[in-house]
Image (cartoon, rainbow, N blue to C red; front, side, top):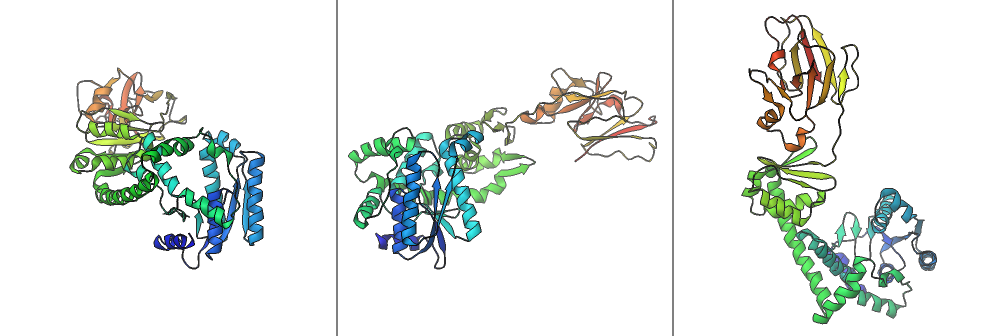
Length: 441
């Protein structure tokens, strides 16, 4: 197994000659065998052990085993006690996610402080098969079936060539000490149900199922790499950003043969499921207006674009502006200025400015979100128009309409803020003074 271990490391270029590696060692058979292989093969390394305080005396016994073995081997050891359940409760996450965040955060600190080239994790072929099946049952795109890679983001997995049975046999032959985690035989967690129930049944059909799943993950990984490369070539044409929103050109998406895979890669990280992405794909050929949601994001099928934005809605209140000398804090930061020299004043042609005949505007002013039934007379027109119809004409996306404000004087809308002033309040040749309202930022 030593030769296979070294060969796998060299083939995947996991360790350079001068690298010192930080081994994540739990005390279980996989990580204790990894520790033994690193030592017997002559690699430079140190060990990190996490005590997650989840199994009482068993957790402490795991730590003690790692301490004793490292002491006999003369290996540098780091240990840390985590209050995992407290962390999970405070951050409103699962125990598994909490443990992952805690350990990888600590590993990074150790690597940064001591200069370790990477962290070694003892994943094996069986872990790859289990992960593929878990992702498949939860619903995943092609990317979720690519398995576990030998190297990702400074984490190496030098035991991926080995079956769990091989690792257990090596431990027996070499007299490697390890501890069994009793929770590994419980079927409370999805991985354990897959391990003990699903794979056991699949092996009755084909004893080589784990190896086949592992090989399939390698093929799918190569396939996905090719698709990622194609997606990257088209991303600049399809995707653009405006402020905090992402725009996907529907025209360019439909021109790209693999647009569903493109959307999978783009949108799954925002929490959209494969089934939702299938619906999004079908909406490309439908009418505009459909909206798709996750907990934190929404995606709108607008006229020419899919628009991705935040799903966290803000609530706005009405704000009364009594006078120019008493400007309260506003939901839209504004500056108000009265200009007496009308002749020399040049009206700015920008959406962030509203210019009005100061004598026609009466204080107090009211700044508020627009509401159904609002109307005004858009600049350059004589007839009145509903604000809702005006926003449609301006092609304002659905999710942005809720954040459109109006400025009101004496019950009349004088400005649909950042869009159009009311024609009745425009500056003309008879205007003696100008009220200039400018949006800051």
